[in-house]
Image 1 (cartoon, rainbow, N blue to C red):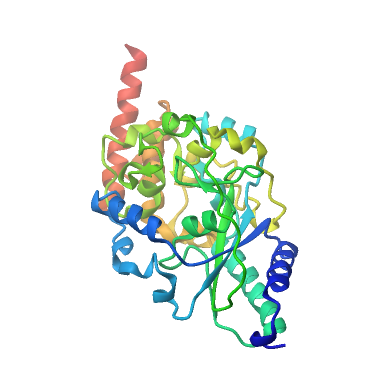
Image 2: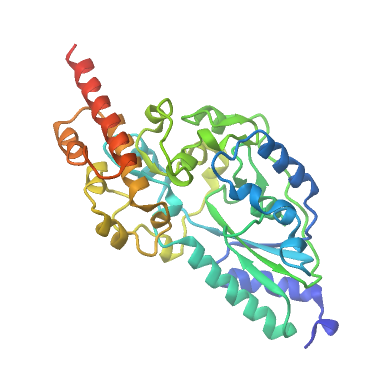
Length: 360
């Protein structure tokens, strides 16, 4: 079969069915018209909310005009895959225990980039078997792609007030991946917004990073502070970070739509290295070689050892006073890296302040 004789209506149905057989919970198709999203992005950038994420400015209109990034693109096949590895009750308990380390649920298992890209390639191979050679490129949070806006247009869900994509049947605990393609497939209806008057995500945000409905100032967001920011975490934000050491799920945890979230059936997303049960002291004791070994194949590795220890030091500073915590921090008090020394010293001071306040 070739593209000229293809029944694209049938092909679209087949793509969705095969995508689900690969493990995607939903597949949708959209055109490439993103002018509204482009205006919103430009307003966000003008306000400087991207912080140190200079790559958000780097590619100009290629981010919002898919055919400029990949010439010939006329459609985007958008796919979503659930990743929640455990019941949300477990997450609540973990978040409320300051001695435990909280890692965002999406990062507990194997690096999602690799898992989803492999499945997208299988989907592309399937399409090629039906239409012959065609133009495409797969993306998983790895290039200037407006994945949330595309998912919304493809009918996978709407962008909520916390800026995550929400689905009425599945909440927001899912990954997104895309195939840009030159095939003129029929498109799906965009999703409609269903947040209503709810402000749970805005109210719960520890650092008040959701500065207005549907608008996140990344510079205050714990996910940005623990993952994207490479320098010093602003001191006024450190006490607000609690035990979060990689990412933050607070806004998802309280969202009413997440009562419909499904646990993942993808084995690669199940927790590795006891990251779902580890204490802060367990993880703080890792040497750099241990960090590299234990985070092999994980999305965590990309932040590097220095940021990992920096983040855990802040969390230890926020934890209740403990002589064992002081001892562990003092072992890194004179670390060779400035960024680690600074945050460890802050944590020691915080621990000492906690000790004084409890003895007064």
